[in-house]
Image (tube, one colour):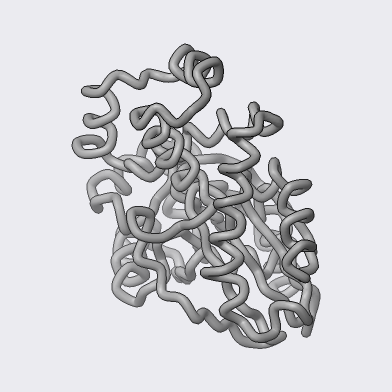
Amino acid sequence: MILIVDSGATKSDWIALDEDGDKLFITKTLGLSPEVLSREIIDERLTNNFELYKHRKEVTQLYFYGAGAGTERMRKFLKDIFTDYFTNAKITVKEDTYAAIYATVSPDEQAIVCILGTGSNCSYWDGKELFQKVTSLGYILMDDCSGNYFGRQLIRDYYYHKIPEKLAVKFASEYDLEEDSVKNHLYKQPNPNTYLATFARFVIQNKDEEYSQKLIRKGMQLFIDNSITQYEQAKEVPIHFIGSIAYYLQDELKEILAENGLSLGKVLRRPIDGLVDYHKSILFE
């Protein structure tokens, strides 16, 4: 059995294939980001999934692509966990950028590939190799235009009384913005980045509001300035995007990229289907 996994900070998509490349099952777990989760929590999330627990000894190959797996230390951390859990499997762990590349880029194509989901990321693919000019320091310092970026800005603006009154009332009616609750999620509960990203839905659902448009454009311009234009090829190659923020705000994304002389390529909400097609092409053809 072959397991292919795309793991974001919020959730993970798992697809199992048999030795002929046919799908056996599809399942989900919560996100498995090693930057914010302990081994105990990751083990618990694996064990709580019936399909994974039931078939853990049948897995012969695991291809895991995950948020937070950008350093050798984090990849080893995850590989050790998976080796103990899937005891008969050969384990491959790569950062989620590779999943985005394999799902969007055509063979030998040069492109910039971005992730705009719970977190954000930007890389250049020259047709064979991956290049990253910016080392991510995580959701507190970076992640422009991500779900947790918009959540952080919304909460700040709400408490600084910068959201228009009518919209602020609506915001407070849909979310628990009580001070102790916010602090508890941010400083005492696991996955504060995922918690912040839950507020991004409000921006998307109210994106036609003037306040939301300004917030969206500010986040996108920051991402362009800080990440995309770091690459000298930015105006020469397509720019592909993966993630829910990019998917639901692709009209705004296309517009602001054009204003910066940049070309929008593919926009996918999730890379898992393209990732499976990629692995089937190299494993079974």
